[in-house]
Image 1 (cartoon, rainbow, N blue to C red):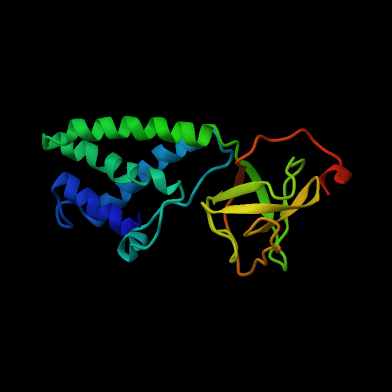
Image 2 (cartoon, helix red, strand yellow):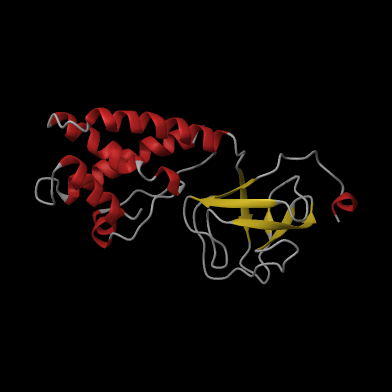
Length: 208
């Protein structure tokens, strides 16, 4: 969901509009919801602090929350519940049930993935660095970030590892594929999670 999608969902859920729910109040509510969601994620990810939104972001409407898209619905729910309660809207009980369900899902999602902080170079190919990563060639990883990953990579996408050393690896779009070239710029803190259990530290010969 983009901020425009979230805003329209809030208007619908609370029976408000841009006059009764001003942009300034909307941004405050969105950032409060973002802080609430990020606090849950930070139980499992160190240094997870996405940048707060501004009224300019809301006006443009194209920004997307950094949390996994499965949980974007929490933003309009968190922003709507208080106003819906004040208005005694019949949807309140349904909102509360959905919030509880999504909070449980977000804890399960981030709590079981063992995300690791990494850095990546802007190069041909891009090289990922993570001390003692424990990964082998063709292990799959997926990425998230608090900012933006370099061009060539994307969040919520599976990539295949190309082992270099016990502290570095490259990424490919397909199994046994070519290493991806990264370009452009990047920001924030990046994380990866493997869909296989982390292995014991291995020697370089074992991983070739």
